[in-house]
Amino acid sequence: MPDILLQYQAEILSSIEETFIMVGVSIAAAVIIGLPVGTWLFLCRKGQIYENRIVFSVLNLFVNIIRSFPFLLLVVFLIPFTRMLIGTAIGTTAATVPLSIIAIAHYSRLVEQSLLDVPKGVIEAAIAMGASVRQVIFKFLYVEARSGLVLGLTTSIISFISYSTIMGVVGGGGIGDFAIRYGYQQFKTDLMMYMIIIMVILVQFIQFTGTTVSRMIDKR
Image (cartoon, rainbow, N blue to C red; front, side, top):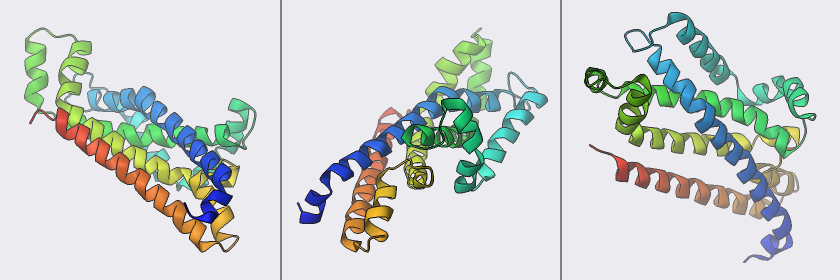
């Protein structure tokens, strides 16, 4: 291991832990909230089971507004809300708030797109067999779209890692913040490059894992 990595070993491990915390909370928010939001976006579209223009418009507007915000501006804009929610706007915990919000909007749109790829005949056949809406969702829609849902989550996780590098502006820490503070700002280019390599390896591992799992569960 290069000497400079040994010198900053404790700080590097801490920054990796911070990144995992921020991304982990974002993934949880994406799955727990983003998946249902994306599902409702699909179900409330014109011609679907729960066609509802008002609900669709509200959810669609929320997703579009959040996704259209430059992420750095969203972080700053949400500082008062973050402080009200958890009592502080500084630190890794505070950084999870804007990350979770963008995660919900990002993944919900990918969920909607994945469900739109499910042939409409599948839904019609499920209803004809007497399936309830819950059964249509969990036993037909999610099963048919599972490969796309996994790929969408994989893409989202990589985006969350990218977003996490910005969280240094609110003291969120993470690998990206470490690379900027200890590498770029202190003119230690080699340290910064090592951090970039770590990020690249992490992203490649996530992409490989997501693609492999998606291929394994793909019914087609």
